[in-house]
Structure formats: C-alpha cells, structure tokens
Image (cartoon, rainbow, N blue to C red):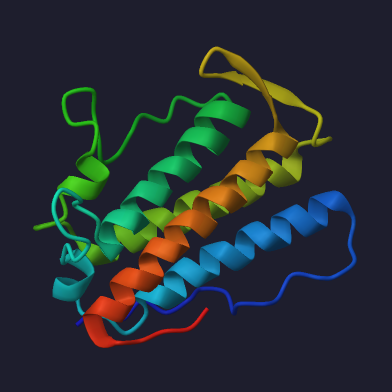
Length: 173
C-alpha cells in the first residue's frame, strides 16, 4: 500500500497579503489538497476508475495530469524550457489519465511533487505578475496563469473529492 503523505502541511491562505503571496498561497493550498485526497489510499484504489463510463478518471490520473499541467505552464510556458510531455503524446493525448493500470504510483507522486517545486522556483524568479509568455499562440501573463492554476486545481480537487468518497467514504475539504 502506498500512502502518499502531503509534503507540505495544508495551511489556509492568508486573509491579507500582496497579490503574488495570496495567489501562490492559494495554489499551494490546492496542491496540498490534492495530495491529502490521495493520502492513505492503496495503489490499486489510486488507479481505479470510479467516475463511470466514458470517463477514465482516477486519483492517480489526476496526479499525473496535474504534473503535466505544472510542467507545461511553468517549465515550457513561463521558463521556455524544453520539457516534453511525460505521460501523453500526440498519438495518446489522454495518456496521463488513461495509462494508469500499470503506472508506478511512487514515481507519479514524485514527479508531480518535483514539477510543483520547479513551478515554485520559476515563479520566485519572475519579476512581475505582468510578465507575459507565449503559449497557445497567445501572450499570457503570469497573473492569468496563477488564477488559471488555482481554477484547474479547484476543479480537479472536486473530482478527487468524489473519487475518494467512492473509494472509502472519506469526505472533507
């Protein structure tokens, strides 16, 4: 049984802070929420697709997907790094969600944590939230990216809530 434990304690974001600190705190809050939703769940249950046909959604798929999201937006987008996809390809665009049956749970969590840490480091080097980068043939500000990442995690944490409740009845925020 793999029991991912949150690398960071979940801390409520501050009620008063500057914009960068507030957005970064909310993003970290949602990152830790995802990990908390997966804590104490067996490898088999993490891989289990419980959302129902046609969805291939699983907790492990969410972790792999969010590793890809972190990697894409922060490393490829903001930092301009050559960071190819890890779990999907042009021929397998949903590989992050679909290919979990034999996926290494420990590797997936380690990769996701590493991508989160890379994202934090990249964000720390950004001088202003007004800095833009080109992705999807659009100029995107770091401010927009942080709001989008909070939305992405919040949406997927809702999925994780439902999946976890189906696994063992655990509920909570």
